[in-house]
Image (cartoon, rainbow, N blue to C red; front, side, top):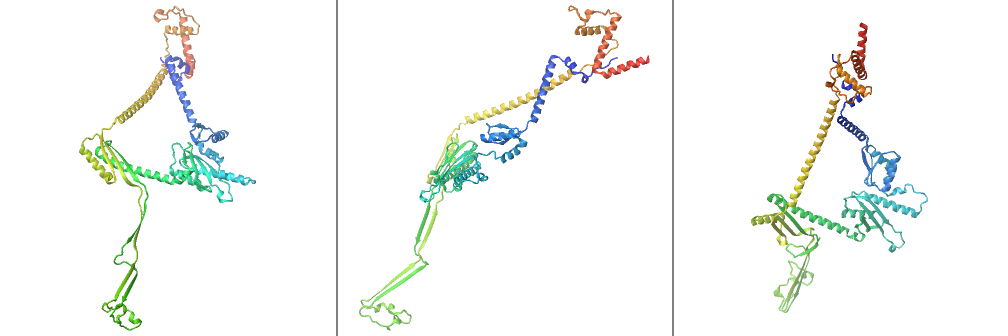
Length: 552
């Protein structure tokens, strides 16, 4: 009768380990070491907090104070960027910022009007004036540092002492040093804004007495040139407008040529000469008197002289000298009554309102005085096509030959070698990256397959084949096993020249006592293994033996 003995899950580790070969022991050891390392790395990673930058661009003194606070409160931190950045766990970043803000950190190295929060009672006028100047400098530095392009700023103000005589008074002066953020630059308008900001905040300070310098020593605004700052800004706007006008014309002409010739078949460049002079003209024109004009005043004078033979008649007095339809007067004497030496003269003076036209003409700035246009086309040899392109360009951008505009169309082959090399290099890089991706994923797949193979082989090697217990064991095999066990325990010595092969042993020639001893030794060995690995089965066997003994 055959009984299955010792399943795999009931084996002890020493017995399993002794059954493995050397290669399998090495593979299993590597696998266990990799699993332990992965578990340790995962545990370390899961317990490591996520650090977030709490403060950046710190000065050394502020960084030292912040580190001392973190050490006192047992808050873990990391320092990077050469000590200018301090990171804390993400769950505590807001708490740390608020706590350090209450302590005035980071302080930026400036003080403002909080300097007067705890002013002592016995402060002199000189000390108060110095503190006021320090506070004003700090507040201006903070305001300038709040600009987008400015990282930090320092302000130095010189306020002279007041005097009794006006001609002896000296103006206030100031200097500003700005530290710009990486990649940032102050425009002329921003420099002018800083100049006006500081000059408006300090009594007696004008932009002419202010100097602005960056950290590299470049003068952004000089007091001697502050009066012309507006002109400089205006010139910059003129240049920007001119470039924008040139770009607009280039884009219009380039798009037309791209649609006709194809992309990258033509290159357009335009240079515009613009007149930025602002001319103001006042014109006053006096118009001649015309019919229907308004009469301001009129005067008519008539002079009459009577000669010989003239008959003077009329009623003496005023009525005869006043014009009247009923009675002729002196002024209406007929010419035939003047005599031979008489005459009559009439003067008429009429004054009209002055008619004039007054014109105030301000010429618009930025007028185009001249355009220079150059068009390069890629290897077009047909004169008719070149002439067509030239006429289309003249109409597209408004070329005026009367003002001296110049337009040239030139055909020449374009050199595309550089772009072809760049395209080839880009394609090669993309192909190499693609191969790297395939190799990486292939390596990962091979590693997974190898790991699965090792686990599968190890699992198969750990499976134990059933051990059979036979009622009538082969005496020769039992003897060999007993001799091997006794040799391992140094209980029985076998000659070195003895051949243990089954053929050389031949048929057994044991006595009954020897056979019984061998069977007993084999049974004891099986019982010992069963007591170690399957004590419940041994208990059942003993119980079975006892029941048989009772039946007897």
